[in-house]
Image (cartoon, rainbow, N blue to C red):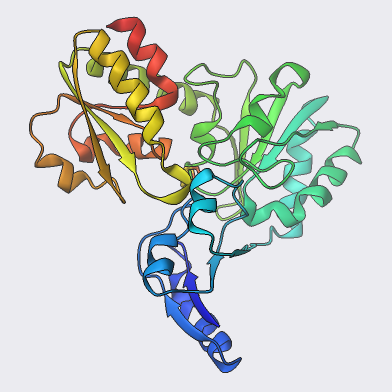
Length: 306
Ligand code: SF4
């Protein structure tokens, strides 16, 4: 079988190990060397170019079937990568949760295999634990940078959120489209073993994003970014946004690329601001892009200003 193996950033160093294993089983192996950041980003274009029979996508959970996935008709096997929290750190999370009567529990796919165990351990000390499932996520309690629903939907039922994730990427998404939750969000970082309230940091992030939207609203010419990455491809959304901007007497053009590359955009000196229809976390790179970037789900906030 011709198989394309795809690894996210941070896991590419494991690629050879797996490539050798599948090769020894008699498969013809290709490695995708493109950047890959999420389960949404399956390397269909490369797989089609090499006539692969199958893609094995490492490091992320299955992403719900996007219409573009169907178009390629190439089977995808997702192989998650799990990282254990040590027992002592789980005890610290349980201890912290005791401050509250009811908590919402959430995490990322790397730690999802221990989710139920952690939930039970928090419940065993008398704290009620609520969980939910987001539409783009494969598991109860899992969040993505583009799908915080599993946590934010529980706001009115609990006293706090206990969220387990390394880095800021996932917890900075825990808001209701730039409206902060009214309860504390506690992040437990399994790598630094730090447990801290990140609510103020999220509020500052929201404030920064709102400032960027105000800046964008002053623009006259908008570039609407469409990525051809399979799970992010949204040309119809871009066309609708273009029509709306034209009706507001703005100029708007749709730009298509696989990766939203700040360097490539810098050469388009003509745009005052960008609307991003791809991964919402690309907007966080707005400083390197050099112009304000507004996400699709923030478009109403922008339209209120223009
Ligand atoms: S769109 Fe962005 S945040 Fe959502 S799964 Fe893809 S890479 Fe992750």
